[in-house]
Structures are given as structure tokens and as C-alpha cells.
Amino acid sequence: MQYFVCLKQYGERMDKKISRRDFIKITGGTAATLLVGSAAITAGCIDPEFEEKETREIKDMWGRNLDIPKDTERLVATSAGALRLTSYLKAGDKVVGVEENEQADIERPYQMANPQYQEVPTIGPQHSGDAEKILGVNPDVVLTTYNSDIDPENLQESIGIPVVVVEYGEILTKEKRQIIYEALRTYGKVLNKTDRAEEVIDIFKDRIDDLERRGEEVEDAPRMYVGGIGRRGQQGLRSTVPDYAPLELLGYENMEGQLKGIDELGEVVEVDREKLIEYDPEIIFIDGGDPHLSLEELEKPEYQNLTAVENNEIYKLTAYNSYTTQYENVLINSYMVGKYFSPEQFNDIDIKDISNEIYKDIYGEPVYSDMVERHGEFGEIEV
Image (cartoon, rainbow, N blue to C red):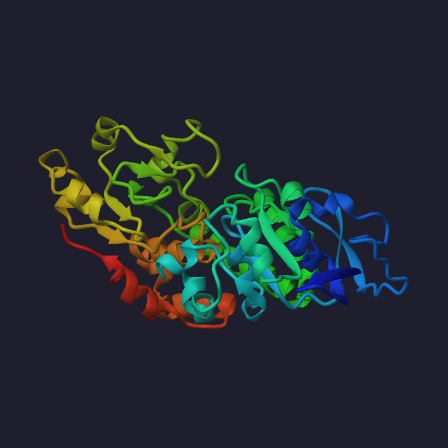
């Protein structure tokens, strides 16, 4: 939609047509309430020849029907996981602004695969962004994931730009994965990337099928524990996820399921120290986001008699969480843990090769070396 405004600058009248978002820039965010039908009235001036930009209707995962531009060439993605999903669709060239945290530390695979994210303006803090800064980069659409820090209706009203909401989902179960797939399809429709959305969905389905098949062939699994999982920052050894997806996809469980039921599916919890010692894991996997706290804890006397410590069966994985779950790393970690606890069923798997295959399939770039440069080597570590 185009709006006609009359501006007075230095005593001279200026007539021009502007977009709704530019109209809001001039008159302030509350100007949305002043727009009636297809007309805008400012300074007593009306244009009878409004130009209407071609739009199409989509439905987001909040159940809202939204009019978005037919061609979406400029976007911002705000809130946890939104830029990751956008990057899955290889739509990084459309991104015109990122949240501040995306430029604070290059630690996630999608940042490494899309160095251009470091060159665009920032649009405010993580989880919500800033309405004025979002408006300043002039996007066609705002992509977001549902969370309590953002009100998409208020944001949309204040900037005059469609805000498309999806749920991020969870990779752990087939039912939860449907939410991921719906999110990809929704963003795919918005960005005219429907074919790519289906391609990404097939990538995940094929990899998960392969992992499940390999897991079924494992006869006896050792006692396993996964620790050091990040949650809004670095965490120590006892920080874990009861339903750890990389193990669950193989048909096995973190601490043989002893932690299940103490929190919501996929949530990070803290295991009791005595319970961990009593369980006595034969293999310990450490999350690779920042393992230093976990390794320091493992040097304490109370952990020295753990079977995993005595036998040096401690392995570093890629980061499970970084601004919510990194689904591509879940797949990679699943191959890693399988390789370490059942090498006979994963004897054809080379960690570097499988990681680069997954990163290239998902992002178009084999960024394993970049991950190692940032996080250090993955695999066996000594305490």
C-alpha cells in the first residue's frame, strides 16, 4: 500500500508517495491508528491515486492470516531460532539486519556459513529486537519464533510490517518434529522457498531414519551421561537434558532414563551430584559449547572413581544449545555418540566428513573446520 503525504520543509510544500512503513517513520508508531481504509490524511492533503503494492495471504503458526508482499526480498529474523530456520532455507542473502547477539560471538554454524550477517546493521537485543531499529532497515517482513519476550501483534502494529510467527518445535519425537517441519514450510511460503523447505525436511528425515536404523542394530550400550549442556550461558558438569535427543534418536537414554519426568521434554536440568556418582557412567559426553567448567569439575576428588574417568572415556560433542537447540548439531552429535559407544555399527562414519556433509546439506557450506577453530577439537578428551 502507498500513502500520499504533504510535507512542509523550510516553508516549501513537498508532495510525494511513500510506503506505509515510511509514513509510520514520519508520524511515529502510533500513526497506524490514523490510517483508514486505503487513504492517509496528513496536513489536509489527499492523493486520489494511491498505488497498492501486490500482496498475498499466508497463515502463520499463531493462526493469523497475514498479507505479505508477493516478493519478499528483505527480511529480519528475531527471537531464538528464527535466523537459524531462515539460514536452513538458504535465505541469508535476504537478511538486512540481525540481533546484537549475532555479531557478539561467531559460535553457531549458521553464522559461520553466512559471514554477511556480520556486515548488516543490528536491530536490537536478542529475543525481541527493537521496533525502531527494525523499521530502520526497511524489511518486507519480520520472521520470529514464539516466546514471551515479544508480542507480534504490538510489534506489527508499531512498525506497519507483517510479523510472521512460528513455533520452533523439538527434534526429540516424531510428533514434535512435525512442528519444525511446519515452521520451515511457513517460512518457505513467506520467502518463496517452498522447494527448499521440503528439501531440508527430507534431509532431516533421511538422517533420522539412518540413525534409528543404526541404533536398532546396537546390542548392548554402556551406561552413559551427557553433561555441561548450555542454558543461556555456560553451565557445569551436572547441567543435562533428561531426554537428550542425540541418544534418543538411537533408541538410548541419558542415564538410562533415570532423570525423565523431572522437567518438560527437552529442558535443561541439574542432576544431583550423589545421583551422578551412584550411577557411575561408563562414558561421559560433554557439551562442546564451553566445556571448561565441566572439565574442571571432573578433576575434583569425588569424581575420580567414576568408571568413565578411570578409563578415559570422556568425549566432547558439538554444542546442543546456542540460542535454542541446534538441530543440525543434534544430528552430528548422534553420529558422534554412536561412533564412540558402538564403533562397530558406525565404522563407516568419519566425524569430520559426516559433519561437513550435514553442514553443507543444511547451510550450503562445510563449516566443520570453522567449528573446530572456534570451539576446539571434538572427540576424546583427557581429564
